[in-house]
Length: 134
Image 1: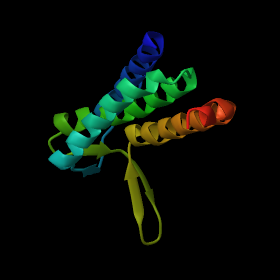
Image 2: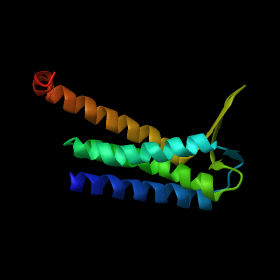
Image 3: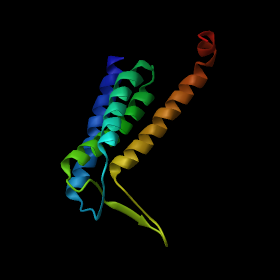
Image 4: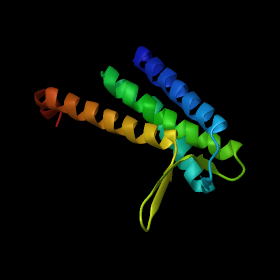
């Protein structure tokens, strides 16, 4: 469990650093503010993933949670570091609407996808054992 927690934390720190360096080196026209409530939720989510995910005997789940935590941590630090709010250097515009995001957002979504895929796969592999516990 400790090695999976180490994988999770080191992955999170690496992805948060990538995001923060990118934000520092790239100008962004758009920023989004976060409320204090969202700040607390992001911190709580990071803590919950670091505590709970390593209990699952899956390195893929730990990596996925680490990538997701890296994204959340990158946005959390950005929120505290940039006075205008979290910078969003990537912009996709359409005819009537647009979308602005950053690497941390991509990391959070892709990490969540990997984490959920690993949990579903683990559940399918351990289906008989999990039924015994019910």
